[in-house]
Length: 261
Image: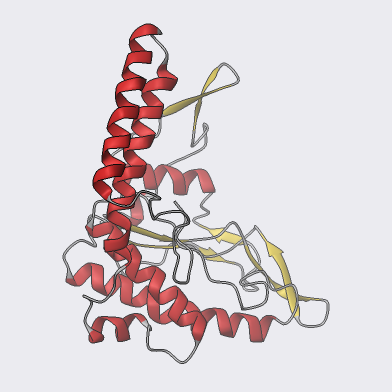
């Protein structure tokens, strides 16, 4: 589910029924009807999927209001994440990071954070790069540092893999007057927690920062390493596509062992 900034983070989360008990009775009736249909049409996986979807939606409706209520967080924690910043984008991203920590505590297995809008093209500055990147850094620096600090303080960083990445970097030379073009040949990704060795820099670009020339890492290598840290053998994990069993890491991925703790 997507959590939006503002007072309504998840659309349509409030049930139309006057009470949770009434909604529960309606869902129980729907479940009985679905199970009856399942018995009549044996082997129809769609019916079982529909039942599970309804139950998941109901549990989310019950859990989300508590998740989004930050009143129980201390002023110290809110300040650490930047929720008292005079820069609105820091507040927005800080709230995302704090919610991410709360999701981790509740056992959510995958969480994706994106930079809030309001800073031009965010990280895709084909123009006005200095102003745009300065605002981007001001947006994310304090909150992401707070998230890692908080996860470590709570003792859950080592079981949480944090990945900060994009699909490309920026060229070291200008594009137009004051921008930079896409650069897929050399850029930075960082990882924290989850079995990653701290304080390690791996790989290097040429003197211009244009192309990777030392310990080159492909995206398949990153995926292989991520899967390894999650306890999954990337050579055996496959998905069906066009009648073939495919690997996420194709035939190219290798685990980057030098960054493992």
